[in-house]
Amino acid sequence: MKASGINRSFSRIKDKGYTYPDIIATNPTLGIKLEKVPLPPAQSLTPEEMERVWSALELLGETKQRDTALVHILSHGLRAGEVVQLNIGSFDGKLLFLPDTKTNEPRLVPLRKESREVLAEYLRSREENSEVLNSLSPLMISHHASYKGERLSYHGIYFAVEKIGEIAHIEDLHPHSFRHTYATDLLLLGVDPSHARKLTGHQSEKAFRRYTLRSEQEAAIAAYYRAIGETQGE
Image: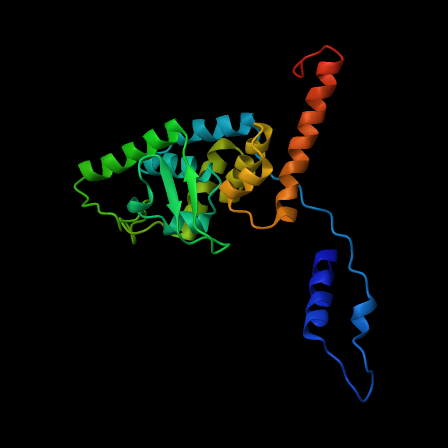
């Protein structure tokens, strides 16, 4: 069993406080130290991989416009489950409002200009195809024959991203890849970690540490090259 699994098992026993008075008076796990589990690295996409994603989107057929809008949304750090819940009323032309999140705290997500334009154009195209839209209409819809026009599901998002990954030749591309990339990029851009956590909806500072580690490493590498008078690309 992995160290993380062992820790979970012992933590459950500690929390439950199991004792057997006729045999042992105290919980034997109380004196056990948990295994040290290394923080998993951020699985961010490189700039070159992101370029391959954008190029792959150009090769799609019927789903090209929707999937382009989908990737723009995912690349702002949203979880797949959060995207599923988005309605047209969640988008005010500039921001996305997420009332229901994993942390049970609503959050606002500002979109880049290009992403706002892509999303607005996607919605315009749906109206031009005679779809009647209102504030409660799903923001992302399915193109599957059995669910056409219905809300794009969690599995539908994963399937769409996996297809993009196959075209882009990126192994194991999944929706969370874009979330990792967004969080890492925020820190590399110099955004305060507390502000970055508010944008991504990370409740745990410890969980967010994987991104600060990456940004600190990148900053150290850049500082080294500046110190010796070289550019990082040389």
